[in-house]
Amino acid sequence: MSNLDAALKDAAERVHAALEALLPREQGPEARLMAAMRYSALAGGKRLRPFFTLESGRLFDADDTQLLRAACALECVHTYSLIHDDLPCMDDDDLRRGRPTLHRAFDEATAVLAGDALLTFAFEIMADPATHSDPQMRCKLITAMAKASGAHGMVAGQAADMAGGDIGSDLIAVTRMNRLKTGALINFAVEAGAMIGCASEAERTGLARY
View (cartoon, rainbow, N blue to C red):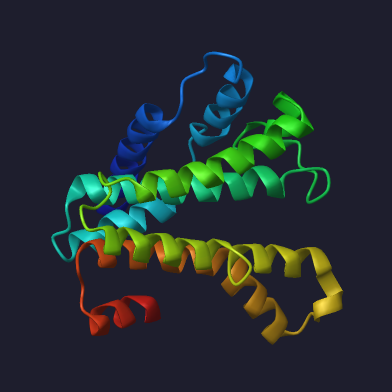
């Protein structure tokens, strides 16, 4: 196993354990919703975005617990996007990570709600003082995550993907779609670690270019 493979494996295991502890338990009237959230969020995967957050933060000696919480918030956003992307009104996929997609394992309405809940839970994690003691920094992280995941980021990219040929099929159109749908959240993953580590503007710009 290479050093990179080992680092990715270690990050994935740490993020999985942290998510398992953070996600609401399956109990009470909302047990089915909680079970659906956990079904998707704890389904494994490369956890590449959290890896970028952890590693970029370590460049600036950021607090590891804060980085891990931000990484978990980011993974909740990513998981919500996969749940909605798999829906019949989108890609209509039957499998995700080797097992039935959430709307197949549960039902379509539960999948929509679980995705919504994971998205909002991500902001709950990021807004908690445990993620950063400085409320201004938490606001900056929340704003950056919202921009990366919303109508000027990931959601815009998904809309472009759904529009297909209507937005054009040349290299510029495809590049823009990928930059928004996939790139925006990956860029934020790198930026979040740098922000928590109090990197300078020049250092953050360098990481964004990377």
